[in-house]
Amino acid sequence: MSVLRQFRRRCTSAVVHGAATLAPLAPGFAVNFAETLIGRLGPMAPRLASIVRGNMIAANVYSPEVFRQHFRNVARHLTNGLRVLSSRSPDAVRSIASRDVRVDDSVEVAKAEIERHRGGLIAPAHCVNYLVSLVQLNQSLPVSMYLRWSKDARKVELKKRWCDAAGFDVIIEPPRLTNPAARAELIVEAIRAGKTVAITPDLAQRAGEGVAVRWLDRIAYLPSGPASLAMLAEVPMLPLFARREGDRQTLYFASPIHVTRLSRAEGGRTESVRRAMQCWADGFQTFVQNSPDQWFLWGDSRWTRVLRGDPVYSGVVEPLMKPETAEAQQT
Image (cartoon, rainbow, N blue to C red):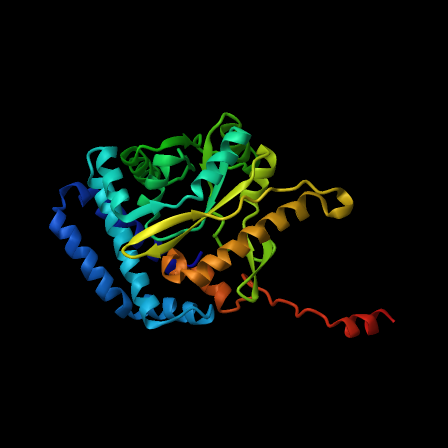
Protein backbone atom coordinates (compact mmCIF):
# COMPACT_ATOMS: atom_id res chain seq x y z
CA MET A 1 0.00 0.00 0.00
CA SER A 2 1.36 3.43 -0.96
CA VAL A 3 2.24 6.02 1.66
CA LEU A 4 -0.39 8.38 0.21
CA ARG A 5 -3.10 5.73 0.44
CA GLN A 6 -2.13 4.91 4.03
CA PHE A 7 -2.32 8.62 4.86
CA ARG A 8 -5.78 8.93 3.27
CA ARG A 9 -7.03 5.91 5.20
CA ARG A 10 -5.73 7.29 8.48
CA CYS A 11 -7.35 10.67 7.79
CA THR A 12 -10.66 9.02 6.90
CA SER A 13 -10.51 6.85 10.01
CA ALA A 14 -9.80 9.88 12.19
CA VAL A 15 -12.77 11.78 10.72
CA VAL A 16 -15.13 8.80 11.14
CA HIS A 17 -14.13 8.10 14.74
CA GLY A 18 -14.20 11.81 15.56
CA ALA A 19 -17.72 12.12 14.19
CA ALA A 20 -18.82 9.02 16.11
CA THR A 21 -17.43 10.48 19.35
CA LEU A 22 -19.23 13.78 18.82
CA ALA A 23 -22.49 12.25 17.57
CA PRO A 24 -24.19 12.07 21.01
CA LEU A 25 -23.39 15.76 21.56
CA ALA A 26 -24.68 17.03 18.19
CA PRO A 27 -28.10 18.73 18.34
CA GLY A 28 -30.70 17.60 15.81
CA PHE A 29 -30.71 20.88 13.90
CA ALA A 30 -26.94 20.65 13.39
CA VAL A 31 -27.24 17.14 11.91
CA ASN A 32 -30.08 18.29 9.63
CA PHE A 33 -27.98 21.25 8.49
CA ALA A 34 -25.02 18.94 7.83
CA GLU A 35 -27.24 16.72 5.66
CA THR A 36 -28.37 19.68 3.55
CA LEU A 37 -24.81 20.98 3.24
CA ILE A 38 -23.32 17.63 2.22
CA GLY A 39 -26.11 17.05 -0.29
CA ARG A 40 -25.49 20.41 -1.95
CA LEU A 41 -21.69 20.46 -1.83
CA GLY A 42 -21.14 16.81 -2.74
CA PRO A 43 -21.75 17.30 -6.49
CA MET A 44 -19.19 20.12 -6.42
CA ALA A 45 -16.43 18.21 -4.60
CA PRO A 46 -13.60 18.38 -7.17
CA ARG A 47 -12.16 14.87 -6.90
CA LEU A 48 -15.08 12.78 -5.66
CA ALA A 49 -17.70 14.35 -7.94
CA SER A 50 -15.48 13.78 -10.97
CA ILE A 51 -15.00 10.10 -10.08
CA VAL A 52 -18.72 9.49 -9.46
CA ARG A 53 -19.75 11.28 -12.67
CA GLY A 54 -17.16 9.41 -14.72
CA ASN A 55 -18.21 6.05 -13.30
CA MET A 56 -21.90 6.72 -13.95
CA ILE A 57 -21.07 7.72 -17.53
CA ALA A 58 -18.98 4.56 -17.99
CA ALA A 59 -21.93 2.50 -16.72
CA ASN A 60 -24.28 4.38 -19.07
CA VAL A 61 -26.59 5.48 -16.23
CA TYR A 62 -25.60 9.14 -15.85
CA SER A 63 -28.02 12.02 -15.82
CA PRO A 64 -27.68 15.31 -13.90
CA GLU A 65 -30.67 14.42 -11.72
CA VAL A 66 -29.42 10.91 -10.91
CA PHE A 67 -26.01 12.40 -10.07
CA ARG A 68 -27.49 15.00 -7.70
CA GLN A 69 -29.92 12.52 -6.13
CA HIS A 70 -27.07 10.13 -5.40
CA PHE A 71 -25.29 12.78 -3.35
CA ARG A 72 -28.51 13.68 -1.53
CA ASN A 73 -28.89 9.98 -0.69
CA VAL A 74 -25.27 9.77 0.50
CA ALA A 75 -25.83 12.82 2.69
CA ARG A 76 -28.83 11.13 4.30
CA HIS A 77 -26.78 7.93 4.70
CA LEU A 78 -23.93 9.71 6.51
CA THR A 79 -26.11 11.81 8.78
CA ASN A 80 -28.34 8.84 9.60
CA GLY A 81 -25.16 7.21 10.86
CA LEU A 82 -24.81 10.10 13.30
CA ARG A 83 -28.49 9.86 14.26
CA VAL A 84 -28.13 6.13 14.99
CA LEU A 85 -25.01 6.58 17.12
CA SER A 86 -26.59 9.44 19.04
CA SER A 87 -29.81 7.53 19.73
CA ARG A 88 -30.35 6.19 23.21
CA SER A 89 -32.49 3.16 22.36
CA PRO A 90 -33.27 0.71 19.53
CA ASP A 91 -36.81 2.17 19.46
CA ALA A 92 -35.41 5.56 18.44
CA VAL A 93 -33.33 3.94 15.69
CA ARG A 94 -36.35 2.00 14.44
CA SER A 95 -38.26 5.28 14.24
CA ILE A 96 -35.53 6.74 12.00
CA ALA A 97 -35.56 3.62 9.82
CA SER A 98 -39.35 3.52 9.39
CA ARG A 99 -39.31 7.18 8.30
CA ASP A 100 -36.87 6.53 5.47
CA VAL A 101 -37.28 2.89 4.47
CA ARG A 102 -39.96 0.34 3.67
CA VAL A 103 -39.70 -3.34 2.72
CA ASP A 104 -41.91 -4.63 -0.09
CA ASP A 105 -43.87 -7.88 -0.18
CA SER A 106 -40.96 -9.89 -1.62
CA VAL A 107 -39.77 -10.23 1.99
CA GLU A 108 -42.43 -12.92 2.43
CA VAL A 109 -40.70 -15.11 -0.16
CA ALA A 110 -37.38 -14.63 1.65
CA LYS A 111 -38.98 -15.48 5.00
CA ALA A 112 -40.51 -18.64 3.54
CA GLU A 113 -37.09 -19.77 2.24
CA ILE A 114 -35.46 -19.08 5.60
CA GLU A 115 -38.18 -20.99 7.44
CA ARG A 116 -37.91 -23.90 5.00
CA HIS A 117 -34.14 -24.18 5.41
CA ARG A 118 -34.10 -23.18 9.12
CA GLY A 119 -31.57 -20.44 8.51
CA GLY A 120 -30.62 -18.06 5.75
CA LEU A 121 -28.04 -15.98 3.91
CA ILE A 122 -29.00 -12.52 2.64
CA ALA A 123 -26.79 -11.11 -0.12
CA PRO A 124 -27.42 -7.33 -0.17
CA ALA A 125 -25.73 -4.77 -2.37
CA HIS A 126 -24.30 -1.68 -0.67
CA CYS A 127 -27.48 0.36 -1.09
CA VAL A 128 -27.35 3.90 0.24
CA ASN A 129 -28.75 4.26 3.75
CA TYR A 130 -27.83 0.67 4.63
CA LEU A 131 -27.03 1.88 8.17
CA VAL A 132 -30.78 2.13 8.75
CA SER A 133 -32.27 0.09 5.87
CA LEU A 134 -31.09 -3.14 7.51
CA VAL A 135 -32.69 -1.91 10.73
CA GLN A 136 -36.04 -1.71 8.94
CA LEU A 137 -35.53 -5.15 7.39
CA ASN A 138 -34.70 -6.51 10.86
CA GLN A 139 -38.24 -5.67 12.03
CA SER A 140 -39.79 -8.27 9.73
CA LEU A 141 -36.83 -10.57 9.13
CA PRO A 142 -34.32 -10.77 12.01
CA VAL A 143 -30.74 -10.43 10.74
CA SER A 144 -27.48 -11.42 12.45
CA MET A 145 -24.43 -9.23 11.86
CA TYR A 146 -21.01 -10.87 11.59
CA LEU A 147 -18.33 -8.55 12.98
CA ARG A 148 -14.86 -9.40 11.71
CA TRP A 149 -11.87 -8.93 13.97
CA SER A 150 -9.63 -5.96 13.15
CA LYS A 151 -6.35 -4.65 14.43
CA ASP A 152 -8.14 -1.32 14.80
CA ALA A 153 -10.14 -1.94 17.97
CA ARG A 154 -11.99 1.36 17.48
CA LYS A 155 -13.36 0.08 14.16
CA VAL A 156 -14.82 -3.04 15.79
CA GLU A 157 -16.20 -1.03 18.69
CA LEU A 158 -17.88 1.44 16.31
CA LYS A 159 -19.59 -1.39 14.42
CA LYS A 160 -20.68 -2.94 17.70
CA ARG A 161 -22.14 0.40 18.81
CA TRP A 162 -24.18 0.51 15.61
CA CYS A 163 -25.42 -3.06 16.12
CA ASP A 164 -26.30 -2.41 19.76
CA ALA A 165 -28.12 0.83 18.92
CA ALA A 166 -30.05 -0.89 16.14
CA GLY A 167 -30.88 -3.99 18.16
CA PHE A 168 -29.10 -6.49 15.91
CA ASP A 169 -28.03 -9.96 16.95
CA VAL A 170 -24.22 -9.98 16.67
CA ILE A 171 -21.73 -12.72 15.81
CA ILE A 172 -18.33 -11.50 16.96
CA GLU A 173 -15.29 -13.04 15.33
CA PRO A 174 -12.64 -14.26 17.80
CA PRO A 175 -9.48 -12.10 17.97
CA ARG A 176 -6.81 -12.72 15.33
CA LEU A 177 -8.89 -15.20 13.36
CA THR A 178 -7.34 -15.00 9.89
CA ASN A 179 -8.05 -18.48 8.54
CA PRO A 180 -10.81 -18.13 5.88
CA ALA A 181 -11.93 -21.73 6.47
CA ALA A 182 -12.39 -21.09 10.20
CA ARG A 183 -14.31 -17.88 9.46
CA ALA A 184 -16.56 -19.73 7.02
CA GLU A 185 -17.17 -22.44 9.61
CA LEU A 186 -18.36 -19.86 12.15
CA ILE A 187 -20.83 -18.36 9.69
CA VAL A 188 -22.11 -21.73 8.50
CA GLU A 189 -22.59 -22.86 12.11
CA ALA A 190 -24.62 -19.71 12.80
CA ILE A 191 -26.85 -20.35 9.77
CA ARG A 192 -27.35 -24.00 10.72
CA ALA A 193 -28.31 -22.81 14.21
CA GLY A 194 -31.23 -20.93 12.63
CA LYS A 195 -29.73 -17.46 12.16
CA THR A 196 -29.93 -15.31 9.03
CA VAL A 197 -26.61 -13.71 8.17
CA ALA A 198 -26.06 -10.82 5.74
CA ILE A 199 -22.98 -10.98 3.44
CA THR A 200 -22.38 -8.22 0.86
CA PRO A 201 -21.10 -9.53 -2.51
CA ASP A 202 -20.52 -6.18 -4.30
CA LEU A 203 -16.87 -5.81 -3.32
CA ALA A 204 -14.74 -5.69 -6.47
CA GLN A 205 -11.85 -8.15 -6.46
CA ARG A 206 -8.61 -8.43 -8.41
CA ALA A 207 -8.56 -10.69 -11.44
CA GLY A 208 -7.57 -14.16 -10.26
CA GLU A 209 -8.77 -13.50 -6.71
CA GLY A 210 -12.50 -13.34 -7.35
CA VAL A 211 -15.16 -15.03 -9.47
CA ALA A 212 -15.39 -13.69 -13.02
CA VAL A 213 -18.91 -12.44 -13.89
CA ARG A 214 -20.40 -10.50 -16.78
CA TRP A 215 -21.55 -7.10 -15.54
CA LEU A 216 -22.42 -3.99 -17.58
CA ASP A 217 -20.76 -5.32 -20.77
CA ARG A 218 -17.47 -6.09 -19.03
CA ILE A 219 -15.94 -8.75 -16.84
CA ALA A 220 -15.82 -7.95 -13.13
CA TYR A 221 -14.63 -10.13 -10.27
CA LEU A 222 -16.76 -10.74 -7.18
CA PRO A 223 -15.92 -12.60 -3.96
CA SER A 224 -16.77 -16.29 -3.97
CA GLY A 225 -17.65 -16.23 -0.25
CA PRO A 226 -21.43 -15.68 -0.37
CA ALA A 227 -22.09 -18.52 -2.83
CA SER A 228 -19.58 -20.83 -1.10
CA LEU A 229 -21.19 -20.21 2.30
CA ALA A 230 -24.68 -20.78 0.88
CA MET A 231 -23.56 -24.08 -0.63
CA LEU A 232 -21.89 -25.24 2.61
CA ALA A 233 -24.91 -24.25 4.73
CA GLU A 234 -27.30 -25.71 2.13
CA VAL A 235 -29.39 -22.52 1.92
CA PRO A 236 -30.14 -20.24 -1.04
CA MET A 237 -28.63 -16.79 -1.46
CA LEU A 238 -31.30 -14.12 -0.99
CA PRO A 239 -30.33 -11.07 -3.12
CA LEU A 240 -31.42 -7.73 -1.62
CA PHE A 241 -31.55 -4.42 -3.52
CA ALA A 242 -33.36 -1.07 -3.28
CA ARG A 243 -35.29 1.46 -5.30
CA ARG A 244 -36.56 4.95 -4.53
CA GLU A 245 -40.28 5.56 -4.27
CA GLY A 246 -41.05 9.20 -3.55
CA ASP A 247 -38.93 10.26 -0.58
CA ARG A 248 -38.48 6.74 0.77
CA GLN A 249 -36.24 3.83 -0.05
CA THR A 250 -37.92 0.51 -0.78
CA LEU A 251 -35.99 -2.71 -0.18
CA TYR A 252 -36.81 -5.69 -2.36
CA PHE A 253 -35.60 -9.27 -2.68
CA ALA A 254 -34.80 -10.72 -6.08
CA SER A 255 -35.46 -14.43 -6.72
CA PRO A 256 -33.61 -16.81 -4.38
CA ILE A 257 -30.43 -18.25 -5.86
CA HIS A 258 -29.98 -21.95 -5.17
CA VAL A 259 -26.33 -22.97 -5.37
CA THR A 260 -26.60 -26.27 -7.22
CA ARG A 261 -23.85 -28.80 -6.55
CA LEU A 262 -22.45 -29.81 -9.93
CA SER A 263 -20.59 -32.97 -10.79
CA ARG A 264 -16.87 -32.90 -11.46
CA ALA A 265 -17.60 -33.34 -15.17
CA GLU A 266 -19.78 -30.21 -15.09
CA GLY A 267 -17.11 -28.14 -13.36
CA GLY A 268 -17.67 -29.08 -9.73
CA ARG A 269 -17.66 -26.58 -6.87
CA THR A 270 -15.90 -23.86 -8.90
CA GLU A 271 -18.58 -23.84 -11.58
CA SER A 272 -21.37 -24.08 -8.98
CA VAL A 273 -20.08 -20.93 -7.27
CA ARG A 274 -19.50 -19.12 -10.58
CA ARG A 275 -23.04 -19.73 -11.79
CA ALA A 276 -24.53 -18.57 -8.49
CA MET A 277 -22.42 -15.39 -8.46
CA GLN A 278 -23.36 -14.70 -12.09
CA CYS A 279 -27.02 -14.98 -11.08
CA TRP A 280 -26.41 -12.45 -8.31
CA ALA A 281 -24.48 -10.18 -10.70
CA ASP A 282 -27.45 -10.21 -13.13
CA GLY A 283 -29.73 -8.88 -10.39
CA PHE A 284 -27.04 -6.43 -9.31
CA GLN A 285 -26.79 -5.10 -12.86
CA THR A 286 -30.56 -4.61 -13.05
CA PHE A 287 -30.45 -2.75 -9.73
CA VAL A 288 -27.63 -0.42 -10.87
CA GLN A 289 -29.31 0.28 -14.21
CA ASN A 290 -32.79 0.89 -12.79
CA SER A 291 -31.85 2.66 -9.54
CA PRO A 292 -28.33 4.09 -9.97
CA ASP A 293 -28.84 6.76 -7.31
CA GLN A 294 -29.36 3.97 -4.75
CA TRP A 295 -25.90 2.39 -5.03
CA PHE A 296 -23.47 3.67 -2.42
CA LEU A 297 -20.18 2.63 -4.07
CA TRP A 298 -20.00 4.89 -7.15
CA GLY A 299 -16.92 6.56 -5.65
CA ASP A 300 -15.20 3.33 -4.57
CA SER A 301 -11.62 3.06 -5.86
CA ARG A 302 -11.88 -0.59 -6.87
CA TRP A 303 -15.14 -0.18 -8.77
CA THR A 304 -13.62 2.87 -10.43
CA ARG A 305 -10.88 0.62 -11.77
CA VAL A 306 -13.47 -1.89 -12.98
CA LEU A 307 -15.47 0.79 -14.77
CA ARG A 308 -12.37 2.40 -16.28
CA GLY A 309 -11.20 -0.94 -17.71
CA ASP A 310 -8.16 -1.53 -15.50
CA PRO A 311 -7.06 -5.10 -16.45
CA VAL A 312 -6.10 -5.78 -12.82
CA TYR A 313 -9.80 -5.51 -11.88
CA SER A 314 -11.68 -5.89 -15.15
CA GLY A 315 -11.79 -7.89 -18.35
CA VAL A 316 -13.32 -7.69 -21.79
CA VAL A 317 -16.44 -9.69 -22.63
CA GLU A 318 -15.78 -11.89 -25.63
CA PRO A 319 -18.40 -11.28 -28.37
CA LEU A 320 -20.74 -14.16 -29.05
CA MET A 321 -19.53 -16.09 -32.08
CA LYS A 322 -21.84 -16.26 -35.10
CA PRO A 323 -22.90 -19.84 -35.98
CA GLU A 324 -21.24 -19.74 -39.41
CA THR A 325 -17.98 -18.52 -37.82
CA ALA A 326 -18.04 -21.30 -35.22
CA GLU A 327 -18.72 -23.90 -37.93
CA ALA A 328 -15.85 -22.57 -40.05
CA GLN A 329 -13.45 -22.80 -37.08
CA GLN A 330 -14.45 -26.37 -36.37
CA THR A 331 -13.69 -27.39 -39.97
